[in-house]
Length: 394
View 1: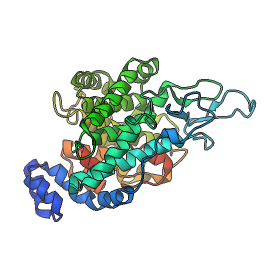
View 2: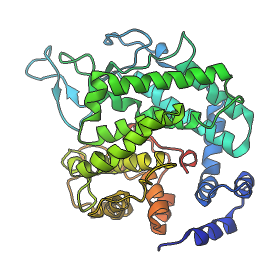
View 3: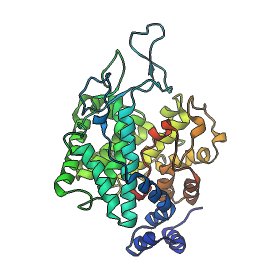
View 4: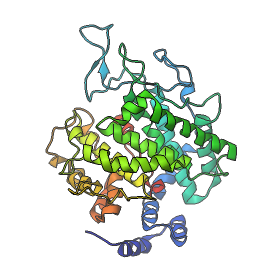
């Protein structure tokens, strides 16, 4: 059922029963923020209390003898590449959609841990104003992006390498998709979490990494891919630019979204044809939808509102949501091939459903969003789940 803002605000205001959510409403926060705060308050505070005593761990604590880089260089191996059974010592070969369990994934794991813990702590700080949460969120930022002994170098030269083929590939840039919500969360923190000098150092790290994404050969190649990798590049660039105040880059991405990203990837029926052609069409369709919806949400604030934008033929976020909604509601209706892996672990709570429900005025999307699992445990699903704290996005 469609709803207007006044009806939605009234409904939300009438159901708020939690303390900080009420003060957010009184302060004039949006109805969406209040609704998400009410929905997620218990989940956020439970997670934040669990993460509060956990010390930050960065990539410098975990070395791989396979890495061609140094202790501060992020390293990962391409997921879908395996030893060649005909030449065990030769270059690895591709098996699309089938992750090699022997790969080195420790750097990914600690980055994902960062992306889970630091935004949850920040969300808890927003809800409670308990400075302990902000301070611990700042500790993570300082360890990863400031402290010389533990910081990560601001590039991904050695990400998703392939044995016998490459020490690193442009496709590896998708690994730092897990820094998107970290950057988002950092924008809400101030002196309660970091000194002014440390906060500037954090922003400088993201400024340098964004420059590498834009100007390195790997970064340029990734931007021109024609599937979810380009969408993920754009979401990263948008959020890193948001943190550093780079509105020129964000304006360029808005134009790219309208002129190329959307028309090149979205079919007239709202599907993502290039994702449907993969061996995990269900997973990748949801993933690209969530990232594209996150990108549209990220770019709100000036210029064209991409959450409601549509091409002349109707293609846009609302069309993509219309296509996927029935299959998120009932996976049994999925008319395409089942994913070769992890099909049973889906769907989980889709941030795209929330963003599209708000933008496209479809209450049923939000109703479904509320029922889906916000805490996936399958490692592959977690790897493709970069937006976990919608409170930071609405």
